[in-house]
Length: 148
Image (cartoon, rainbow, N blue to C red; front, side):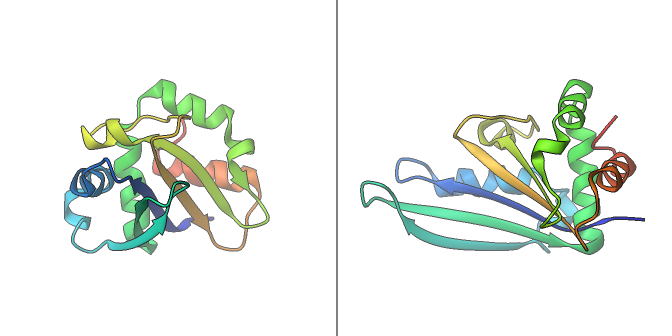
């Protein structure tokens, strides 16, 4: 059975934002018991107008990644799950074995999970070992509860 092997959640903290709030948004997306074990990387990059932008990336591996996906699934409403199911083919890169989903950063800060296609997002990448086909990925996502 195909299973996710890594979960990455990443967001930018722009110069006008409180980096702590962006960090909180990322941590709100994983279960409380995993927050201390998650790898959290901080990288400063330069924006379009030479302004500093902090990119925060949270990573979980193996069973921790699966537990975090179950946590996300429990917070995602049925409409969002159907939306993810309907758009799975366009979100999944079968060559790399990666699923890409954009979540609302503002909603994540408030402790909610919403798929969002705007600019102010948490980028979620689910990595599958061996680049399985989309049907296998769909079954794996159903198993963790992300799809109806």
